[in-house]
Image (cartoon, rainbow, N blue to C red; front, side, top):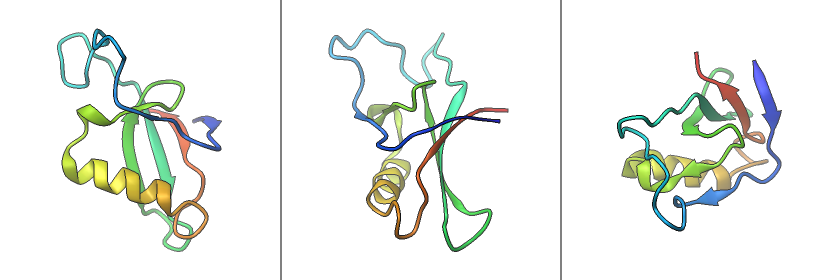
Length: 89
């Protein structure tokens, strides 16, 4: 179920040329998700859509989800474990 462990998830804002499909656009497929599991509350955490390499396109996230993602990244090792890339069901 877990594809790989990411030590330092990349922080991306899309492709430089802007030609990559965006989440929600026709033809865009997000078959993976990046999961930050809580260290203290089993079953809780932050999940964001990503590609197979664990790269998250910040431009496609809502403000609330973007803030949760950035907060989870900042709290790795304190509140959240290292994120994992999972195939979406």
